[in-house]
Amino acid sequence: MSNKGKQFETEAIRTQMERSQNLEHSSPIYMTSSFVFEDAEDMRASFAEEKARNIYSRYSNPNSNELIEKVCKMEGAESGFAYASGMSAVFSTLAALLDAGDHVISSKSIFGSTHTLFTQFFPKWNVGTSYFDANDLSEIEGLIKPNTKILYAETPTNPGVDVLDLEELAKIAKKHGLIFIIDNCFATPYLQQPIKFGADLVIHSGTKLMDGQGRVLAGITVGSGELMDKVYRFSRITGPALSPFNAWVLSRSLETLAVRVDRHCENALKLATYLEDHNQIEWVKYPFLKSHPKHEIAKKQMKAGGCVVAFEVKGGLDAGREFFNGIELLSLSANLGDARSIVTHPASTTHSKLSTEEREAVGISDGMVRVSVGLEHIDDIIADIEQALG
Image 1 (spheres, rainbow, N blue to C red):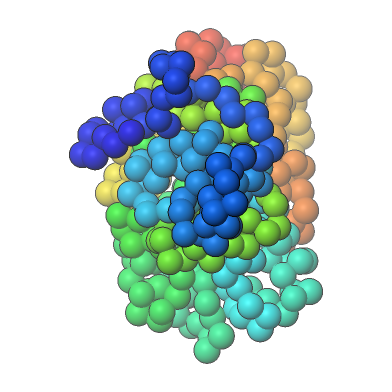
Image 2: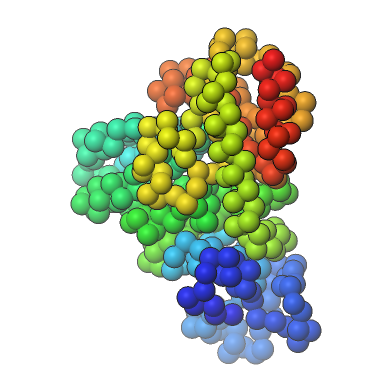
């Protein structure tokens, strides 16, 4: 169904697959591994890619197709592929585009598993990585080599919610002929569309705010048709595809993305403002706080600040441990973007594979707390944090 020119919320709700003979209002689930052909010529033409049609759910299914179409419209992308998890999207996208001997330049402030990919697995295939400080983009050009192919970053970053200037990154990538890839997981397409600022490809962990209720694992990459063709052909063969059921769940979730994320951001800003004035908090970072070092850049490229607030409790590791043990209402989990508020200790969970020096280099102190602010009433969220601090 075409809804060209509609507003974001309308696209998210009204982008659906064609109705079947049953004329269902909500899209059905196509729980099938394969699809049949009308005759020998139909089968031949389908495998020859002379016609666009579903053949096998490892690489094409009506539910994943619907999800991809929605996210492409949200992000302003030409094409996409849906994955079984956010990390399968990250790995498959990079692996599809990199050759042995290539070089990647990445922000230091990236998800722990992505860091492990760059430091432990890609070197086995002679792919090197150089890191730049997320708060100093002037370092990037000095790291570029003749074999550099990709410029990679997250913004806002995980878990320190640093903000990188997408326009500036895009200028550097274009000047040097690099493929510019952004992990847009923390912002979602509702708050930020990196392609508008010059990104070539955008990656999401759909597990987070896109689903929003902690139900499914999912990932997606969207962007340039030319690049996505390479990503698609790699992913078609290697098999990291999203299941039809999870694609159906995620597509329904996107119908409420805007209203959910509005409330997440409203709650998060109120919590960040409260913490900023708290005498037991060393520091707090949230993109839409005026005290954030990149507040103006965040306002330029984001609609609101997202659901993640980072802060440190005074007293270091021991005080942080007491705080976590004192939490009653909020969940202790490594996930984020859930309807339920979550508190996480990055140094011992999501970024535990990094050395102390590596964590310190990206601003992850031993006492840092990451709060994914949920949809509960803000008074109850603040009350639980207050009693845990007490």
